Length: 192
Image 1 (tube, rainbow, N blue to C red):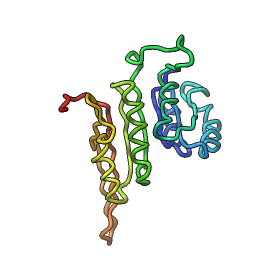
Image 2 (cartoon, rainbow, N blue to C red):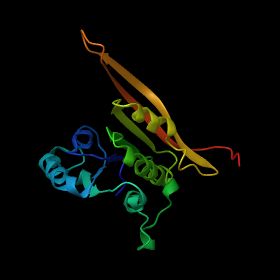
Image 3 (cartoon, one colour):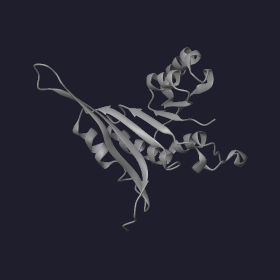
Image 4 (cartoon, rainbow, N blue to C red):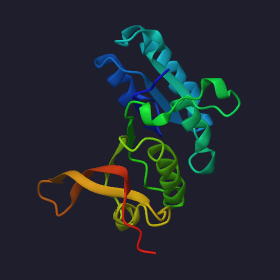
């Protein structure tokens, strides 16, 4: 099965489930093991409304970091255990990865970056949209440093802010900043 949408840190699944109810696509919702019961229940409750039918959405646990290779095997049907099911990932359709409000714990920055590299590097046409509210300066630090730790001689993650919404609260000096970033795995000239 070719998935077109992958949601990282899906939580209760609102975004991915709504997409499956609106668009004819296959969606893979991921989060930690402890989120799976509610995520699967919400998927089951909404499955009759999916454009492509009840099997359009799959839920799988995905701890970020080095274990993400299991998800790339599922996404791109290239399980090393079954070489007959392997197919050329360059012929895979592009994948849209979604993640929202996932960078507020600094200890998750590197595992999230490693997960993005392992998935985006499998298909250069794929893209990740990361959305979030700026809470602390370290949120900006994540986006500005994204790709530096996982850069290779030929490729790196490229992160671009594609949308920013600034809401000022009436009679207050506080503001909310919501940003959407596009992240891609791009080639570059080796400077080494």
